Amino acid sequence: MCLAIPAEIIEIEEEMAVVSVGGALRKASLMLLPEPPKEGDYVIVHAGFALHTVDPAEAEESLRLLRELASAAEDENLP
Amino acid sequence: MKYLHEYRDSGLARSLLKALQKRDYGDRSLRLMEICGTHTVAMFRLGLRQLLPPSVQLISGPGCPVCVTAVDDVDRALWLAQQPGVIVTTFGDLMRVPGSCSSLAQEKSRGGAVRMVYASFDALQVARDNPHKEVVFLGIGFETTAPTVAAAMLQASREGIENFSVVSMHKLLPPAMKALLDGKGMDLHGFICPGHVSTVIGAAAYEEIVLQHAIPCVVTGFETLDLLQGLHLLVDQVLEGKARVINQYSRAVSWEGNPAAQKLLGRVFEPADAPWRGLGVIPGSGLKIRKEWQFLDAASRFAIPRMESREHEGCRCGEVLRGAMTPPQCGLFGKACNPETPVGPCMVSSEGTCGAYHQYHPED
Image 1 (cartoon, helix red, strand yellow):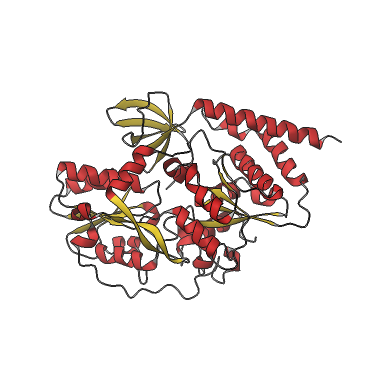
Image 2 (image 1 turned 90 degrees about the vertical axis):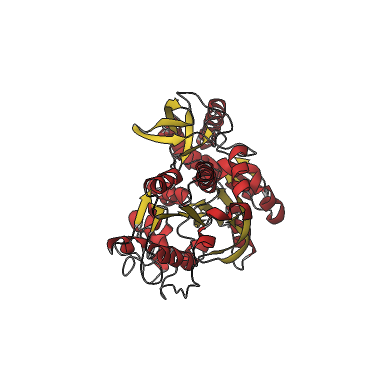
């Protein structure tokens, strides 16, 4: 039931959106999102409803932390 | 950014994995439970289980909605499917779950009116299209699904759709996590908390568990690097003797969760005791329909009889769901119980632990 992949909003019509899940188009309701999203945003979709708009700043920050963690790990791995 | 390949970088993954393998665990054995079935499947699919050091064990938890549905509840759904003039609508996962004597898929093949839907709104559409039939939606799922069912009920009420009702078998995960920790012999050192349940309830929802049980909780995403970072954040805490909630999946989960979804969920449902397969009745772990919404409650609309339900004697789904045994330890696994002819729900669902073991690692 869980879709683990974020879906891209292609088109919005009132409270419904056409979203692309890895290229496959589906419909998703936007009525459970606290803030209205815009086309091009990525959303977490569950059972036909968007539940969260992916936060690009948070995504960047978590990637930065990941790279830091990996580089610290590499340093430790040096002989 | 598509939020996919960025989190699948093999170079970064190799470094993170090597670091986990090289850590000094002493003589400790860390038992980390992934609650969510989608995490279980992701770990298998990526082969992470085999690559982790022997000191880090992954235990699969009860986070597959159809797997934890009590057999009585399945029997009630089957009873509804047998009633004349009733169309039962359900998510696909529940179709093949065996009840005491049959499954929804079997009822459908015998001519029963059972329709598979992708979303609660699709069930509402079935009701609009069939005004002379009673359309019942089987509400199964966790905090992620319940608001979507509440949305359909709200819409039914707005439109005055009178032939639509819902059986609420929804369940809440934090009470089940507490019940697991309160159970005897559950030696767990950390929780990989569900990603998408947390989009609704927020990372803050695990604070109480951490406070009461001093167990680290890390809300984790589903991509390779998410899982590895989540494991690092858990291992760090366990080895340093710390316990707090960390939100690894912050791009999709906020601390407070989704207030709009929580509000709608609370408007239609209220917490109630609920039976879990394998875990028994857990206080406050289910959602029942509030009195003011009783007109949409299938339990009020139909005189559903008390079920004399029985599970298959050899089925060990209960133990598997508690993390007390692995699927290959069950005598039926891969023999009488397989994906073609599943005996227990954990073999049926795409998120089920037995199904994941069978597909990816039957000999483990």
